[in-house]
Image (cartoon, rainbow, N blue to C red; front, side):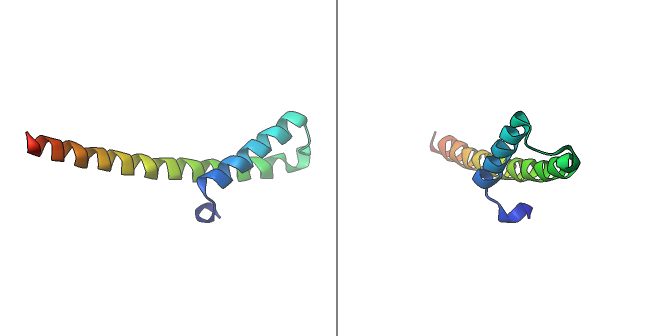
Length: 71
């Protein structure tokens, strides 16, 4: 399931879950399963953010190398 969700979808699901936790609408019997699901959504968000960070760093390195070559 991790790879099928976008960052925005996973983040929205986490926000909804937090609201349910704050409202107390999650039954105690389902709390463990809910936490497991939340961990999967967090992993999706972390993976997406790491990928974006790697792309930004790679692009910044390319720009830096180009600007050094022009000097």
